[in-house]
Image (cartoon, rainbow over all chains, first blue to last red; front, side):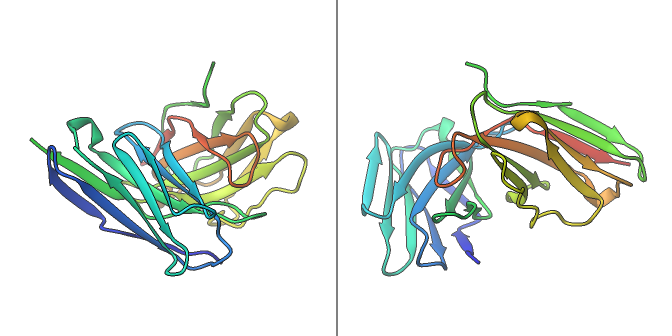
Length: 111
Length: 114
């Protein structure tokens, strides 16, 4: 079955700097890659997703890139702000199968 | 509109007792998922329901865990003879369709087994 690895498990960046979280997946048939953000005491919430027919997608300060050949995808957050502090999960899924989540990255934005 | 709701928000129970956790998905969502999140850990898949199809129970950790979804809407996760290792946050999510679709999560139920 699909296996999603996520790195790093913890990331601290200075406010205003960029943050990058990387994930790899094992099943080449996976074609949908969402990213979720979980704030303290809340359930995860989708922030951006990408499908395998594109290599990059951007929404304001966040962007996701996908390399199908290498089977890895990344989340990029630019101009980080205190409200970006949270746990971020990557995930992968394919047709007719459930979504598989990575183990999460705890992002700390330092003042 | 209303999001996914879960009840209770917190549950403290004694080891060996049974507990029931409830999830009310977003109206019209055909898929419903249960996850377990231990302190500081990732999302452990437990079970999902999709329409009238047989549920995927492949993530249930033992036969003490069961879930049902009545009328394609409300779902109940039952844990029998609770153990201390069952202590975690149990999250429910629903989606419009089950594959490659945004999941909307509830706030979770924090279960503490003493």
